Length: 320
Ligand code: UT7
Image 1 (cartoon, rainbow, N blue to C red):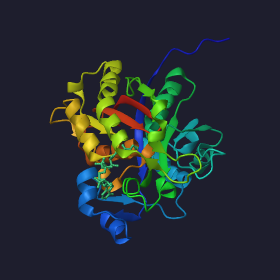
Image 2 (spheres, rainbow, N blue to C red):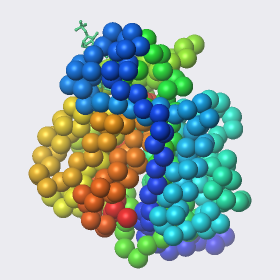
Image 3 (tube, rainbow, N blue to C red):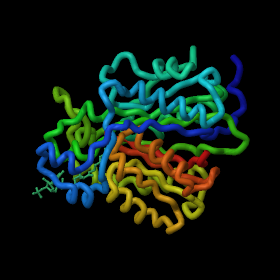
């Protein structure tokens, strides 16, 4: 048997995103009769509005659009792609997964394709697997997609959950590189706390013990971010941008404080107009940050995703 090829380096070559045109404001939620206010949602979560997919916008169709844009940004076409990984937890049906249809939709005929379900942690898991596939030579060019239609899984009368989530998709193209562009992953899980967020057996909508998840996120995840930096051999002082999962602006603030990030670090705050889009959250926030020009191409960026499972994962990447 032939040995694994010598390791290569990997990088993110381009990003793409799909934000549904449909938009739901906090006032819209209150106007529907939900016992809440714009003021409560803004101050407790930082969310002002979220995107809502139309009935013909699906996890797969949004993923295809985001992936096609990421390929265009990378100067590639579907024919160049040999692996597609779809991070999602909101497919309407569990069988089959959606990745093969995304591959077909972008013209990546015959590409390897599989889904990753690590809920809101999913994109960072999928990115790590994509990076390893490129580094070992198992793939040359990988499309990693985070796509979610959470609004299919929300109880619009449950004010503890429905105010938080939104729909959307974003994608990254991972290719070989001369210099390291995707650092090692710091990942982990806590299955004992699985019941704190998710769709309970026999139920149909996401339920959550919000305060428990909030406490976990604000007390347990800063060490994961530090570990991702250590693994990448990067000092926190050298980080140009921080892209945490967009679950709650107060969680983002707490992480920034716990990590003592200097003022010059650009912090992704896509949550205000996007809400929590689970596996799409980190790539959407990364895409928005890269597009804003707040970080130079090549800037070291710390990703940190976490959520149901519980699962978490983070790594340092260079902005394409
Ligand atoms: O990606 C998955 C991971 N999920 C998360 O990271 C979510 C983490 N958790 C959170 O973001 C917060 O816990 C929430 C935003 C969900 C809730 O905020 P909170 O500050 O933890 O509020 P709470 O659940 O402790 O509730 C405080 C009060 C309660 O009223 P009483 O019992 O004090 O009278 C709630 O009933 O606020 C009430 N409340 C609301 N009021 C107006 C809860 N939701 C709402 C609402 N509008 N939407």
